[in-house]
Image 1 (cartoon, rainbow, N blue to C red):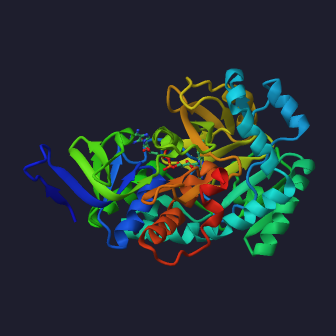
Image 2: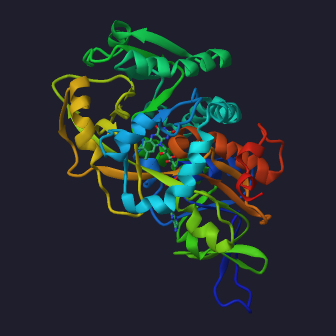
Image 3: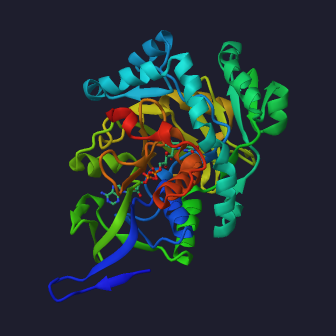
Length: 427
Ligand SMILES: Cc1cc2nc3c(=O)[nH]c(=O)nc-3n(C[C@H](O)[C@H](O)[C@H](O)COP(=O)(O)OP(=O)(O)OC[C@H]3O[C@@H](n4cnc5c(N)ncnc54)[C@H](O)[C@@H]3O)c2cc1C
């Protein structure tokens, strides 16, 4: 419920709401939806349109069976990366001194035992991802964007396949759907692929999205029906006024008892001035759409594991998404990975001309332990955080929304929130 107060002592009228959610990416929108469903009045504030930043350009895979996070590369791959020959990873030399502590922490978190521990503590969130998306999509009338065909990981060498057998074993122990296939088995699922790979794994439980922006906008449109108000404003105006949080919006100042930061890679811009420093870095990634040649089509996203890119069927064409670029968040785009991986991609699938003049660039918000931060901000009672979802923000938006809403309202959380607490970096 919106209450506008303009007492005589106050010059400008101030709107009040229970919770301000800053950031209308997939994470903020899902949090707003779950908060509103619990009866709170919610205002969603962004400086741009819903889902137009990082959430616009992803590969569209809702991967509830995700287990092991990406790991720090071995020395052979490191050498290729260093020589700028890797199709998977690019870097800006000038960004490395600043990134060094983060990279060291990432390397430490990539020890096998730590990766398996990450898989364990992230399981409750991933396990709910598909069901939570399906529920939101049904409410938003957006089911047409969801394809329940899973996704396919391709391995060009036996060595690459063997390297991920541990993940298959882990999947079996959790009862997840991962079906190893030979070349013919994979080609029967995706006949337009060329048989340039040896092995494949079909992760059957994943859902893919044919237009991530449209899905996010549909979730945002549903918010209006839940009574949430969307406003334009700059989150960096957040400050305390009369013991409450206040943000300046284009409709005037807005107050709330609780505020949630869901600003993806920009969250630190607001958090650090409030005295909370967390080790967030970005793994930048690009996409570009291509027209398929002739009638060639894909039924599901496909990962070329040896070359670290994905091809995903989207409404706009075949979306080719790249691996990782380590660079400052706001540095100009350097989409050099396309030249390194396009020959392999064209060998695998008949890609024709690109649809857009230039590739899209996004920045995955990443903590070195590959876990998001979900929960209360350190030393701040009514400041909440939901960011750092790295490679899986689309997947994890809805379960994050549920968890945040349970924490804010004091309900029993559906899982132990401790592994996602910001305090793991500040203790
Ligand atoms: C190439 C690529 C492929 C990916 N593939 C997948 C995939 O297949 N599956 C998956 O699950 N995930 C994938 N991801 C990851 C996923 O896209 C992200 O984790 C997710 O989009 C992050 O969402 P978010 O809401 O946290 O951030 P964002 O979508 O970036 O939202 C943050 C919002 O904050 C707003 N904002 C920022 N600063 C301010 C300010 N000062 N004032 C007001 N508003 C502000 C922005 O405008 C934006 O709307 C991929 C990412 C990339 C780059």
